[in-house]
Structure formats: C-alpha cells, structure tokens
Length: 127
Length: 127
DNA sequence: TATAATTTGCGAATCATTGGCAGAACCATG
DNA sequence: CATGGTTCTGCCAATGATTCGCAAATTATA
Ligand SMILES: [Zn+2]
Ligand SMILES: [Zn+2]
Ligand SMILES: [Zn+2]
Ligand SMILES: [Zn+2]
Image 1 (cartoon, rainbow over the protein chains, first blue to last red):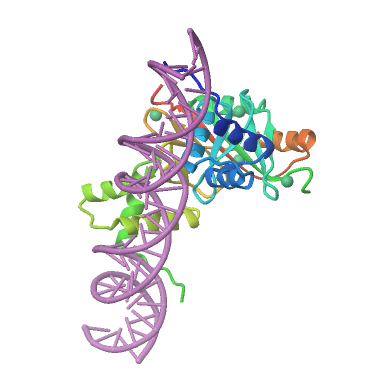
Image 2 (cartoon, protein in one colour):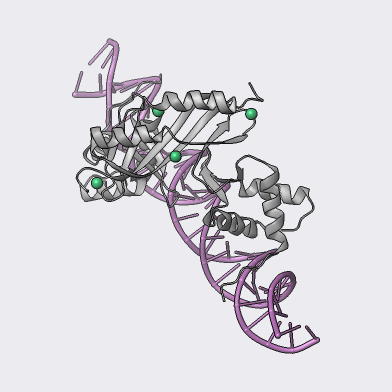
C-alpha cells in the first residue's frame, strides 16, 4: 500500500511547469495542457500541483487575485525574485538572513524558526 | 463628494483590531463584534478591513487555510514577526535589506523595487 | 491475463468573498 | 432642528476557485 504510480497526467503537468519558469495557477496549467492536446482534468491538475508542493518539488504562492500559483524549484533553502514584467522567477540565496535573526533576538526577544521572503522588480532581460 | 464618514461600525471594528495585536480574519472580527454585542454585518467587516488596508492602516496576509487576515500596524516600512504560539505580531525594522538588494543586482542582474518578508518563531513572552 | 492498489474524471458541494440595491446614517448648511 | 445630498450599511444573491465522493480507468506485479 501507499506506493507511487508514475502516470501520464503527472508527467505532462510537471513538463509544463519545468518549461515555464514562472508561477502558474491551476487554470493556467490546465490551459497549457489543452494547448498541448493533453487530456487531463482540472481536478488532476489541482491534485498534482498540491502533491508537488507537499513533496517539496514546487513552491506555491497566492497571487494578487488570491489564486494559488506554483513554480518548480530546488529543495535547498532559498527565496524568489519575481520579475514584474515577464514573471520570471530567480532563486536567491539567503545568507544576510542571519542579521535579521540577530536583530530579532536582541531587540524583540523573538526566536526565529522560519521566515518567508519575496522580491519584486525587473529581471536582467527585462531591464 | 468623496468625503469620509466616521461611523459606529468602523470604530467598533478598528477597536477590535487595536485591542488584539494579531492577524484576524473577517469571520474572527465578526465573532468578536457579536461577543461585544455590536450589531455589524459581515459585509461591513469585509469592506472596512479592505478599506483599512487600502489606507495603509492595516496589513493583510493569507493564512494557512487560504483566508485573508488583517492586523493594525504603522505605515512606515517594516516587516512582521509572527509568534507561532500566541499569534502576537512584532514589527521589525529592515535595514539589512540592502544586502539583498546588492546581491540581487550583482549575481542575478535583478533590479529590486519591492520585497515582502515574514518571520515565524516564538515571541519573548512565549519562550 | 488476473489482481490489487492507485489515480483519474466527472459533477456536485463548499465556502470565503464580492456585487447590487434599497434604506439608514452622516454631516454641512440655513 | 429640519432639509438634502452624500456616504454607509444590511440583506441576500451571485461568483468562482478549490475540494469531495465515487465509479471507471490506469498502473504495477506476477
Ligand atoms: Zn523579466
Ligand atoms: Zn531564507
Ligand atoms: Zn507569543
Ligand atoms: Zn523591508
């Protein structure tokens, strides 16, 4: 029990996420599937995206309209710089974070165990 | 035209947000209003919370269940450290941010114009 | 091919949030 | 303290993304 099946729909969905390096909603993935003549239901898209996130293979964020969006990314700790023009997602290391950790403890007595960051601007190509 | 009315419902909602220093959903604010015997509709709660956010008097975030939550905060640039135990929100200054700005430009050619950060952990009282 | 476990598709259900609109509240003015 | 124009509020229906339930299809294994 609890085995994992490698299925066609899952591979097709992952394929789309891998080719686009930007946050996509379930609806956008679904549309891309239809454009590629892949017959996958919207339900399966939702389930697969959530599964990728749970496995740590994708990162999710809620966009301005309140919709969940997903992007494939590495599992090591990093943050995302999102281009306002093309949506391109750049993975950013996070060394300077230690400064915040220190400041939080010194000034607020707050002990950090996690943090989230997002950067917005224009990527190298769009400048 | 376009004047602003100071009304009872708005004051009652702001009162609740001021007394609780943590992120509250519209439903939670509504329940608090009922507990205080204040007769305000859920619609008004939604409208007032969004209005506070638009005026910069409150900050909003989407919680783990996908619901919008709000907290009163100052207008100057800062970030939030959220206690995992009691939900207390601490405002955190953001000087070390310049490091990220530099790194993004140097390593990724990415030009920053905005960023978002959230910190999670345990506040001084809950440690 | 036979079998059991897992996944899929479909449609219905959920549920936070928004929209429309008639009436109530607000506030400046006389 | 009345009047009148503007702004808010409450009610309730509509929206729309996401989730659920379940029978049928797919996968893995022998
Ligand atoms: Zn770009
Ligand atoms: Zn980090
Ligand atoms: Zn705490
Ligand atoms: Zn900052």
